[in-house]
Length: 413
Image (cartoon, rainbow, N blue to C red):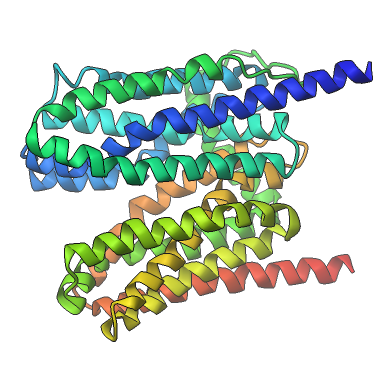
């Protein structure tokens, strides 16, 4: 009986690990061309300023719709695998049609649909990793997948860019080919075994119930779980808003204040940020099992505050720009782990999909409000002042979570 159990657990681990890593590897080429979509819209499709602004806004805002896809797996382990399989098919499908349909509005539709599905499968993936991989292993697997995806996503644009320069229509076929690669991940995902004693709930509910339920579930979690509420306020509201509010000011700061060249920007964004992410991702993964979750979150938000504080010193020497983006890459590596694994951590033995879905919802609400605030501040505050404001918000998140963690520790002792 013990050998049989060991075999099942080993099979779960191997198949789940393979499915997640192959998903990250095979979707990386698509991400590489997707990251150039803003330039394709502007240069090849001659998109209007409104369409460009809409593309930028859509990425965070579609998370408000992603919660409905994610809510389908709440307390339904029987839907976990089909949820990620169908999300992949639906998300990639419009890009298969790019050789035929390639006007600006269709491209915007495809981009929004893909991002909605990309965010929507987070609850399902996190619950699968929680069920099938032991503590410590799931963090390392996630970190490895993120590193591979990040490296491929950084290198491939260097190959794709020259190809697009010489063949203006090549992007249509590159999207179609990379979409097929993305869809091919379903052959690995379908093999993921799900063994759970949780009963499948098949009660039919009216449409109105499905529309309001994700919001009601999120509100209930915030009211019932003060620890999860603290994480959301400190990490998502304070620190997340701090990083987002400064984004509209960065182009003005780089060009008007620092006068950076494209070469200097490329080194900062591709090399320094990439090095920080890749080199520290394994360390963050080990930290997930060694440090208290709130303490680890505080490390991330503190690194987020260091980014704008170091960046301001770029007026003195360009090396501070590189150091700032090294700090940003370090922060991003930790943020990816903390954000994705918050659901499984706070859920403990419960279903984690509702927790992860709330984090997705927070991204959407924040993306709807904060960029507008950041854009408005440009007209009243110097760019360096906005960077300081962003750093202050990040540090506020650190102090808020640290205060809560210390109060909980004193109560327990």
